Image 1 (cartoon, rainbow, N blue to C red):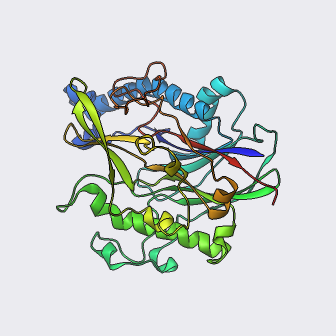
Image 2: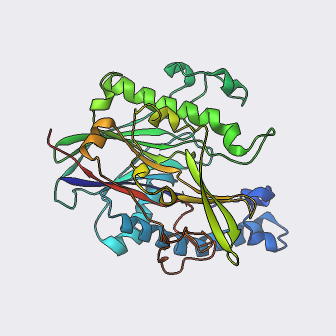
Image 3: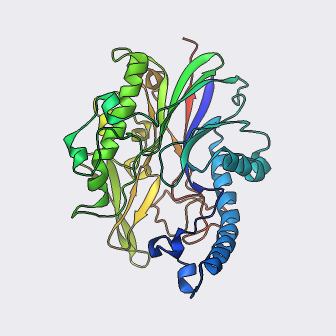
Length: 372
């Protein structure tokens, strides 16, 4: 039987307004920055209007991207809460796919903005096999000391050993697909952020992502046993905010773009994939066609990279040696340069920069779940 498993950072699926831009220019939306706003009340009124107008187009595109995955189970990041997810599913997804993701799960994580990891499931697969929820475990509370993962490098970025490891959560979901067990680990690792302390954002935050990856591995090994984890059926899904390779973009839209693949010397992903603990099936795609996000800080810093992953256990990969993920890029804004031959038709109303389905692309993989 077949299961379609997906992951998608839906980008700020919020049920509340953020007025912090009134006091912090870095958080002020660029549209409001064009206006002279004298009072906080005026700012709040304008921000509400801007957010609502922007949200409708954005969520139509988000729903189109999810519908295109045809996923049976989808792990999501940057979800405010279950009420926001239910409102989105009913008001947008339902209009496109009908009665689909009845079952939704989430848990409050550690993110200071309140964005959490969530999971949506259909009651059955396209083959008619039941999808049974068994249990959910949040690991948001786990500390460095509890897992024995304290590293002196963490002290250099101001992290104490008693602090919680995950910046959001590692949400462990057990399901049965037609009676066959599968465990899904939904994650959203520490973001790279801006350059600081003389280092680029990726380098300065790398110790935290490495710790999160080590924690996910430790949780899996504790659950199944270090010597037996590879023989169990599990997948790690989510936005890991790091890459082992990227496609550096040169040129411009007038003279033509260039696309140069570059391998990274170090990545937090090495903890999970470096020794075969888990397998990244995106590696089966051509190297110019593995990206899920367009990163830019202006013409001097542009690349395509994979931040969104579905990593398979060795057992699950053996069941699916030729399973190749699909990447849904139709919701990307028009400013995203596509390597030659990989262009896609954009969803209606996608803008130059916004609206867009998300800054990330959904990833979905078809998996065979055997009876053994």
